[in-house]
Amino acid sequence: MARREIIVPRNDKLNVSRNFNLPHSPGIRAGDFIFLSGMLSTDPQTGERSPGTMAHETRQTLANMRHLLESAGSSLERVVKINILLYDLLEFENMDAVYRQFFPKDPPARTTCGVQLSAGMKIEIECIALAG
Amino acid sequence: MNRVVIAPPSPGLDMATGYGWVQSSAIRAGDYLFVSGVLPIDPQTGERLQGTLTSEAHRAFQNLKLVLESAGSSLERLVQVRAMIYDRIEYDALNRVYRQYVPGGPPARTVWSVRIMDAFKVQLDAIAVI
Image (cartoon, rainbow over all chains, first blue to last red; front, top):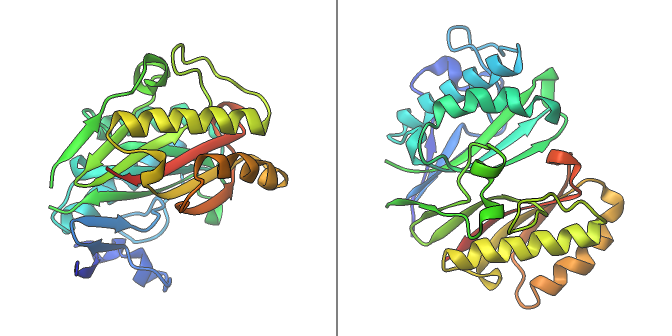
């Protein structure tokens, strides 16, 4: 049977699940796959939410996602599926312009939709990646 | 385990080229296939085929079938589907179409009422096995 293991970021400030006392783990490894919880823009120095423009929130969230995956021995290059949740689809291009910098080659499969997000944030990203 | 990019099954479904979106049509990882959100567009020309929820759901399922089959999977091999619709009031209309494409042993499914790109009424997000 595949093992199930909790994934946490090396930087404690980015362990939002623990710091905000939320009933989820940052990620779970199951066999060869890693499943991450939805991530919002978080300041890696303070651990606080870091709201801003769509470009800012996208950049910060993907940087934190990279850190979390690398903490578990994976990487953005190993992501197979990403789900993007935007507060307003009019901002799609603003998201995509930053997004493409993180996935210059062979980008993951992706689904985007528009939803109401917590705490007035503009973007939430979740993913499934291959473990290291 | 290796990660394989699946090429779009037809020119119209190449969202990276046609729409400029930063995504692969699907990614194969081991025995699993992860498919980018499938929309009701013309598989040859890429033209957006906005219509009723029923017409859009048929087109989206036919496009999903193309992607799955080009990667060596099929609608019968679906594991999990997130069926996204623009309004909960169309839930029954979705189901009438949906059941035609998964007649035996349908996949795990969640229906999300969300806003979808380009004012489409349906989007299908799927994981399948090869």
